[in-house]
Length: 114
Image 1 (cartoon, rainbow, N blue to C red):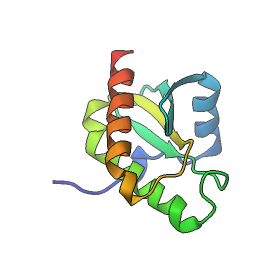
Image 2: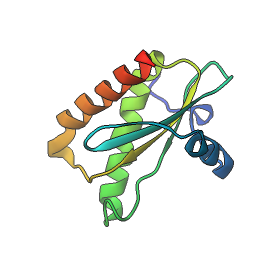
Image 3: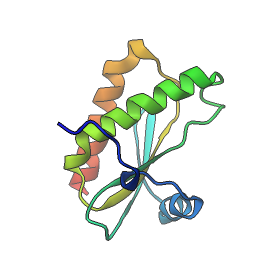
């Protein structure tokens, strides 16, 4: 099993983020917002935006990034050619992990229906 998160699966540049945000398609749940845009690459790419307004401590922001990255890595076979950005609306921690997994799966299900 390949447990890496390779560079080509990441949105890195500002214009890549801007193009996804300007496409103006999004799906939201209580904790997460998923902005998305189709791409021509044939594989998914993900970006994360975790602001200081949501979690003041960098430890908390980094935990949220790690969890969301892992959820994407586990589910990347469910996505084809799509760029998306995940943006938490509320802070979450280890005790909310199961809720976040359920919300992420729900968002993926909604995205696959579209």
